[in-house]
Image (cartoon, rainbow, N blue to C red):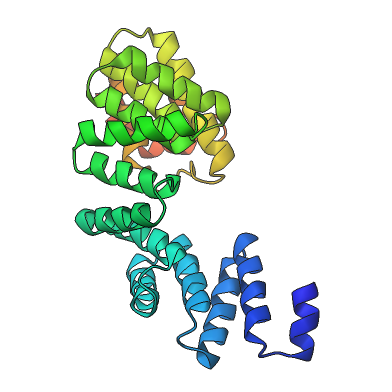
Length: 276
């Protein structure tokens, strides 16, 4: 409200306009923040704070190529702009330009050796490249300094899972889920159980219920049958149908028109051994 009052009197007051746009971004009004930042940049196209703010909006909107260009623009004006460096490292990670993302993280850590976000991005970048030993060291460093860092716990647990260290992986995923409902952690626990091969039908069903219930809570509408299911969801359902004769089917679709699903997928379900 304060920003609106100021802008009503001085509509082109840049500093207050940027503050207002940032407030919109923080409140997740992305379309309005996008519009406001673009309006500011018409008046001051090289304003670093407006450029960074706009780039952050683009990053949140998953418009990675445009976001990368805006972060680069800021870094040409000021190579040590920390917020731009962090944003640029994140967008490079999503663009799978891993060596460049690493270089940015290294640059940030030279400016601030205790910058946890840069360390986390670097760890995730190393993990994506299969450099698990290096990634593990960085995840361990983050967890030692912040034992409640959800992303680090999940990243570390996934490396343990890939190494076949199932007991330790389960422990880290459990730690993550105690702190917060996390799709990555609940999916990780399912993968541990499937890969380990020792879980009972009841255990797998409980873990599946937990995963899909968390998904329903965090991503309302994501389980709509009209949309294609993500690959991870398909793998879970495929495993359960293949090994347990569709025991989980009704649970997964309990609120999502199971009759329509059965009719549309009759032949493939029969091939899985489901009696319809």
